[in-house]
Image (cartoon, rainbow, N blue to C red; front, side, top):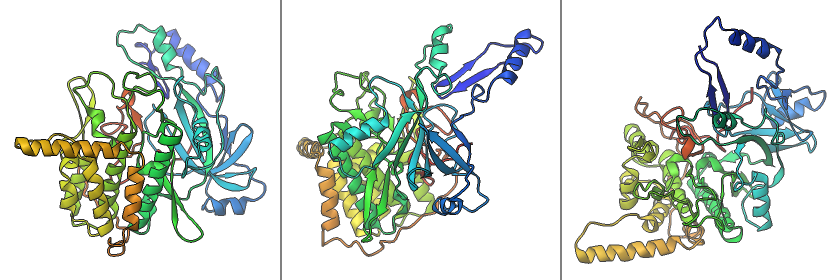
Length: 481
């Protein structure tokens, strides 16, 4: 037999142990004598013991009187959450980000509590510090931050991963890169709706437009690129007048643009983001050097996101089988090259080049169709194979498109102009539609969240994917147990 020690960075495996070896009995003796924290139990999470306000707390958390509640402590502040929330990623490694609707006992209000194992790096700030920078730069449409901190200091072996240290001591016959992760929590303004919960199509575009304003402001005013534009990282609330206001959240793996030039991979060399919406340029196999993600890559991700949302939740003519196939081929599919690098499927690049998927879907909503067509014109990739005069014309259009994308104002201005265009019909076929998807065993992508190249291997084809029919907000909401 072998013994395995897991933490969020990886797993340490012993050599073979015989059942009658003394070391095995010694291990079990030590394990039974260990404290709950030494066995891996989080001492900052306990069963809630409420003496008052129970009825009001349960009403706000939208649960009945029998639902189990937990208390989570952060720097002596206590928050109440519902234990049984939707399951998130079951991968034993990675950041394990989980977001909870929580009730703050001190302020007596709802908040968003995000629990994760952040990557420890001199070039990556804790997320609350990034939010402080963004708020100082007056970036619009980002949530307020109430608190954020590591669960313990860097010397606490229970809340800081140890796999990297064990690897450095081991016989390194296989070269691997391990990160150090540290347990971290941040408390944010509560946002009640995820992007998929829009009621009419115009609301969806308005929410994405607001998120693009946050993305624009962050790049211009704070020199920060988000790097994970996805449905899980855009949320909204309804204002008293009934209009929606969108927010761009989850900035913990954002990139400092002042450090990230093409000659420096020090800032954050690995690709990160949500698989379905990553920019095509990031999968360029002809470039031997790591490709640095930039702001324009995020702009392309907005295009992929709106197209995905339109296919999943707006009116069009694709039947269940065709829709499922297109979602898989254009967003979920992956394969590995000879060097073991994960690559997107073969349909995404031709479709962003041709725009055929927009035409094939025959969207029944004029606003969404026109918005996608206008975005596609500037997002077009690749060279055209044509006669010399056609090739030159294509090069001019491509250069013009790239120049357009280079303008930080372009995306938010385009979405605003579409929303304000009186010639567009935003009312016909505007209701949210949830299309049924066919279920086939070959479509194996799962609910996922964010990922980086060194941790792209887990359930389904990779941790980087999210099932096209089962997206979840903010890196998946789940319960602590």
